[in-house]
Image 1 (cartoon, helix red, strand yellow):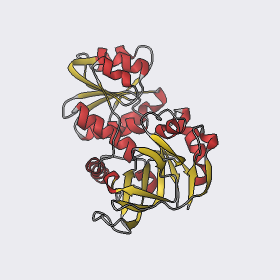
Image 2: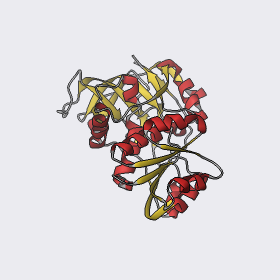
Image 3: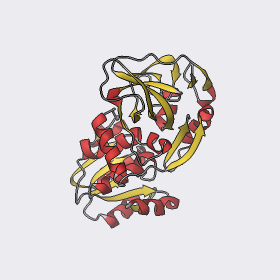
Image 4: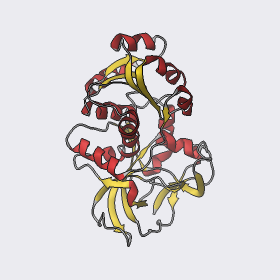
Length: 308
């Protein structure tokens, strides 16, 4: 099969496109014919070796964790899926090697859910990692619900835009930081936009004088350091970008595969409460260009890789 690989840690320039063996199928996995994958910042961070202490690399590595595709074959122990089923998945194992930037991926059933019927494969591929990050932060850690006010740092990005929509579906009032060019986009999602940078605290307090009930940090650094000052008494803080959040009384989130949470995202999408904006689509052989674009850090929505 055709796939993208890298043989050592490095940059997108080290990615190779070519033939690799079809992945072996375990009893609790399905072989997925990949229709689309999505690029996440973690993909180029993993390739650079930044997660080496958390996830061992077995070279050559096929990058990518997000997938939307069709079940080709089911393992001996699988009863949940059959050939022809359309699925989405956050196909992360406890090591990196067998990723989704390929024509096929062997995906453990614990990482999968059915694909939203109303999303294209490219849109659906952008849902798992970013959607699970947003959902698990909001539901599992922040407990955001009806009547709460939530501040989302970097609300126009892949995770942020999904977090805004999920929170709004739960009846949460959302304030989102973004550059001015993305303010109309945030308004279209139901958020109150504020410009990030100097003076942010005053702009947030103008909208939430008594403080916000929760903060979802997707930036880290100065935005994270400012966040405790913006919380109301008893407010909650989660960061997916900076582990220093624990020293500020908050929680650091490393997203995990979860079929129930993925299914909840599918249901939100199918009732029209959740959409995925696709900023760009690249063919598989151009995956390096997709990772370079992601690394620039200015993309609104998701970057997809079309496999066929």
